[in-house]
Image (cartoon, rainbow, N blue to C red; front, side, top):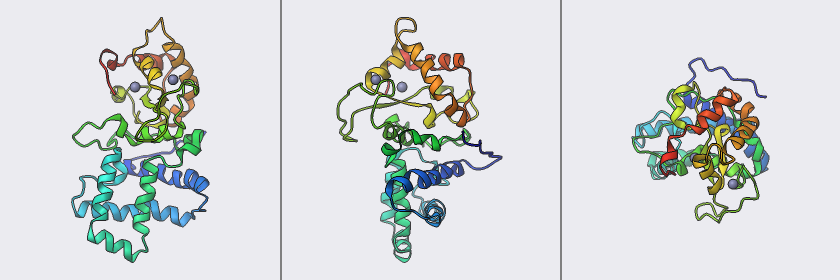
Length: 268
Ligand SMILES: [Zn+2]
Ligand SMILES: [Zn+2]
């Protein structure tokens, strides 16, 4: 179990930065085979993102303190395109031997979950409590779950296999060219106000085939496997949830997971 970090007023973006640093130090370094040095990790996670954040503010590319706060892949892509056409960014990058565009590309790799497929259970290394206050910016529009970075990363880490039963077959998805799966928040985000730390974390995301996903939302309490599956999920995830700052009993877990208002209407 990882030591629980202390926050005392640390800004939210610092928490996501820490997650990105862990990604570079573990996932990226291990699977890229590039022997990324510690000074490069520092450079990518600190200096290059700080400069990028400054340019985003200066040129009004987005209304936020840091790209670490974004949880929408398409918003991140929009910002990347805007920066790549920005003369100051282009010049900065030229002067810095492409260090800034490399920093941006590495962060995009992280957001897209690149190499997470090779990591599988090592995604646990990225579990940590994320303060709810100032949770990743969703802007005014509702971001579809499909666009949510945390879910995309969890899907990659699952290897596109249903986490109820890896033999469940689906079809090849156009976007990923991998078997189609769906990310499911086990404790629904509608209950966020009851928790001190974010529910939009890897430990609270289950990757499912569409059939199992519907079972978790619509399965009958008594006549389906829904409760039994949730109890198994609790046993598997309890420690990881705790590492993410989410503590609750098995009964509360099952009750919250079952008390999903989506049950009455279709959703994505
Ligand atoms: Zn769901
Ligand atoms: Zn399944």
